[in-house]
Length: 202
Image 1: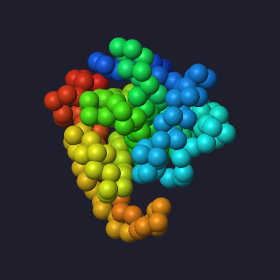
Image 2 (image 1 turned 60 degrees about the horizontal axis):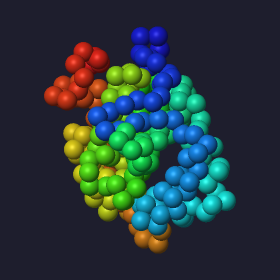
Image 3 (image 1 turned 180 degrees about the vertical axis):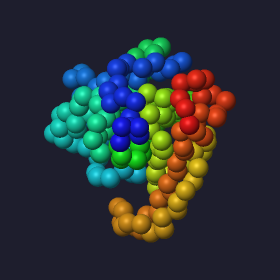
């Protein structure tokens, strides 16, 4: 384990990209969380029903856990806002699936009103960079419903590789659902033209 472990287990937020601020969730994000997770269009491809106002405080409390990845299953929930005006755009998930094997997973949920401008790609690209360059993960995966075309096209823009197509994997909201699984290795990410030079090794 000593020669194959995470580089770090904690993350200092906020983290900035060209247009975005990736920050920790705060108490005043209650309305943001409710608006996003109560939107039927957003929840259509997520587990569960649209969030009620009564459920929002508990969800926010889960999002406000410390930005630490130490044990299998630990995850960071990161709020994404636009630097220009502070508008809340959505959130990122970066999860540690296996510390022993340095496996991680990313996820993202964005407000449909802000889609089509490249914000999700910019944020997810930074999530991969954090997973590889900051935490030292070896492989990062992502998955989505086959019908969620915008999501799997985003993964392909990140040069992630489609590794699996699970057919009729589960009975989801009244129909048999299928999933795509995508992934990328650290060395593949390091060889990309837009990868920060010298920050990670294969």
